[in-house]
Every structure is written in C-alpha cells, then in structure tokens.
Image (cartoon, rainbow, N blue to C red; front, side, top):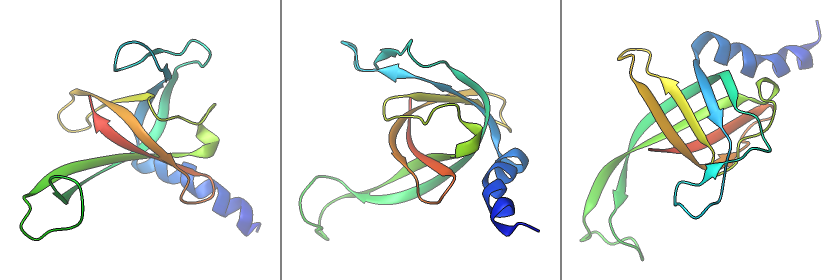
Amino acid sequence: MDLEAVRASLPSMTRQAFGDPTTIRPMREGKMAGGIPDQARAVQEDVPGRFDFAPELEQMGGGRDDKNRAKVISPHASVSFALGDLTWVPQAGDQTERRHPVTDQDEAYRIDRVLEPLPAVVLCVLSRI
C-alpha cells in the first residue's frame, strides 16, 4: 500500500463526502468595487468545497488591544478545496457560490485571502456578498 498516494487523495475524498458543490467565478480588478469577470479563466462549477463558519470576537477600531474598546462578534467563513479538484487556484477577489444544504438558498462570497495550510489543500477566507 502506497501511504503517500492515500494521503494525497484524502483532501479530495473528504470534500466529496462532506463538501458542497461550489462554483468559483474568476474576477479581476475593475472600476467597480466588486470587480469584473476575468475572461482569461473559466468558471469552475461543482467543485467540492468544505465550508466552515465560526463566530469570532473582534475589537472594534484599530491600534493596540484595549480592554475598554468595544468588542463585536462577527461571523467568519472559509471554504477549503482539494488542490487536485481545481483547474486553477482561486485568487483574492474571486467569488464562490453554493446552495445552502439546509435552507436551499443561494449564497455568494468574495474570496479575501487564499492560503495553502497543508499539502494538496487550498483554504479561502471569505466575506459574504
């Protein structure tokens, strides 16, 4: 048994089992704040993505951490993809869409940051649009 081959296939298998079909729309900078479609890259449809949502406590305002500053709980979202399931790696500014598995409502997100925390995994930090 080739353990490296098994390890390399785990990200894709996990997203196939627990992920949501996701559309990734390539965007590029434009005059509008949301950008414009990037015709140089094709839209990727039905890519298995694993979404995670977690509330985080944040300090309002910049500067040093201050106990007297107001704090707010804000939702943070991310989606991870198996690198092998992608035809191109998403970039900051691209958009993702999915149909919520419980509410059956369409959701759209802007990709704010792209990380590669593990081999064969791409993690995108999202904001709702």
